[in-house]
Length: 81
Ligand SMILES: [Zn+2]
Image (tube, rainbow, N blue to C red; front, side, top):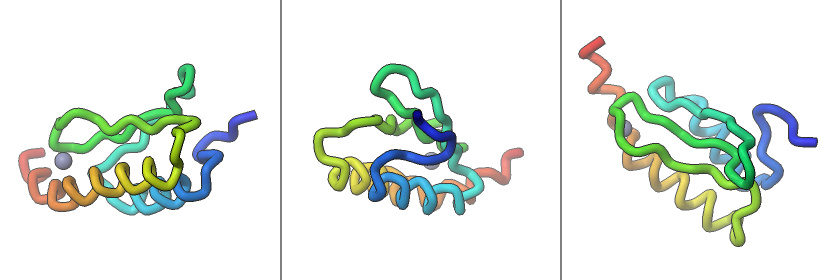
């Protein structure tokens, strides 16, 4: 069973926990096939996919965190709303 809000790999779980602190980033869970879900940014850039069973969870977590760091400044753009 896959529990909501948690990823089976600890490294990725930690990355997702960090992302939830950023109000302009949204973690969307789909549990569709081997896609666990994705991360959206308020800036509207292409989303970052989160895979259920990446070949290398550590690398996947790093890739997610790199995407997050690229969007770390996006909150400033929310002034539009
Ligand atoms: Zn962004």
